[in-house]
Length: 369
Image (cartoon, rainbow, N blue to C red; front, side, top):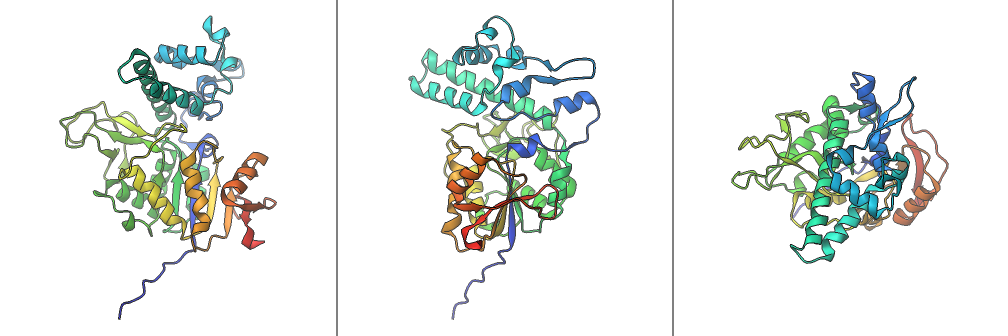
């Protein structure tokens, strides 16, 4: 007589980190006021204006530096022309860069690359600009988040159970270094997950892990075609210790120090290849959803063009789990409430404290009313 497979406990929490979690992070250690200014993370909607901001002092007003124009002049000129920034055609005007959305720029470059035949001048130009923009973004975000952890996130992680997981849509390494500092079960799960070969989704369904569904600045791919690690994603770590920006690019197999981060650009046309590690992480997130009693959103805004995340969270009602609460770290805006209701069919309720000054209730399932 066969035994019935026991369903594991389903009182788990899934923590979902969006860009706001990094923008509002209480980042440490900060050694100087310059490091404080450099560590400020840009928003997606106002990416370039935020990136150009160099800080201010009591004796000087806001300072801006066009680091894109200094490092990638061709990309800078293309954006200036495409977004009709007339002043910037003559001189740098940071105000014209307000509200230039990084996702819209990447989508523009993706569409441009696909519009022309392979190898043509226009196709190459769009492809090169897209690659240079991605390298610019990853390099500067890596410097901004390198080695920093978040005190707010630490406070929340201390409250999680060993089987609770974290989903992050951010490229930066703030969540990684925060988990390392806490040294909790989900940090061990994250290390095991990224070093598993081959990765089996079933091995991690009931473990606490960090799932970075858009890639990460410390996921490195070796460019050396003769290397045994060529084309493979590796977490930049030695044992249980994450590597810092200056040392994480060197390949441990061949020594090549030009490794590139594996990140998925924020574009509506992103494609996740079936059978890839990223594909398996999305499947793992979907599998873990059915065992969650709570989903906690921190700084996540449900971007209207992120169809993969919408696919993921729309499946809440496919499952027979015991999901009871959807939580948000702050009082959600009217737009976010509408998006939550559209995706998850929740009804709103007034915000109240959940025991941590960083958690706020934003919504609940209709069945709870």
